[in-house]
Length: 421
Image 1: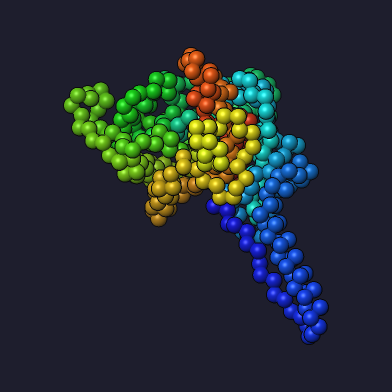
Image 2: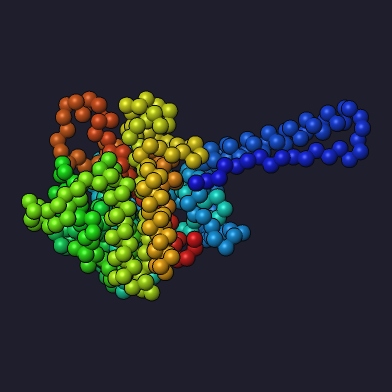
């Protein structure tokens, strides 16, 4: 989390002055200095955000930091309608209706114009041509749930913008649509998404028919999924939202023979830990660590109850137009215990010589309550009259509009791929 700025104490030295008037004047000057430091520290974010369009060029420099490494995940959002968005929703041939907020009627587009500014360095500007060159002859695969799929769509839109000829790019669905492949033919590179919302095997593995009342996982089984992504050159994993329940039902046995399986309801945190153990054992043993770079994206926040940012509890992200400006804001939708389990799993892998880097999107995404689709997306089911009267009842406060926040997640991924972090 971003460290709070603290005003440094000012030491008053009178240099031999003895008159009460001069001493009093020195004290007043010192108080003014302290007040100026305090106000700059607390309001710098807002002031810089309002004037960002005049300083947008700072985002183009790469890694300008006094330290060898910079924490790219600690910083602030700056309004920048000069450099952002990085592409147009209408010009992305493969935009998802789940994220196409402008297409489905959203008029305020300020959510597209926010740039993430790390505190002590600059986030490298995304260069689609450089990334495609790095991916020449390779596979970049996102593995996880619909949040990871949104990040994949973002990446496809980012790179597709530099491929002008339609015959040099294609999209294919395979394996019952579990695997989607975008191919940049000139580079023989693919950017893929594999649907595996819990990483391990589950009864929600069908990418189209996964809305089931009873969620069940085979906690020790992952090979069914992993065979499609193990040999990739870059892997980007996530799993969080589908675990958000008190207990997770597990089966020891087969989904083809559910009557003879052994079932057990296990507390969510323990089941999440077990799933990540299965996943980490697989990537340790089966993934070629000299060839494959691996990343794990931390949990994506939700904004379901507006009392978290000072409004009525029954409100949510619907009609929000501005980010949360409170430093270190943390909503109830993000589970720090689950984040700790991910950290422990990655630390244990690192101790065994396996490097999986964390792309920590959580805190920076917490601020972006206005960046969700809310009602501006394709509705898969017909809306009721009650829903139409009260849009908050069907607002999507889990996913994100594009162009928007997931583009920044990919800028962070880009920085790690090129070693700028």
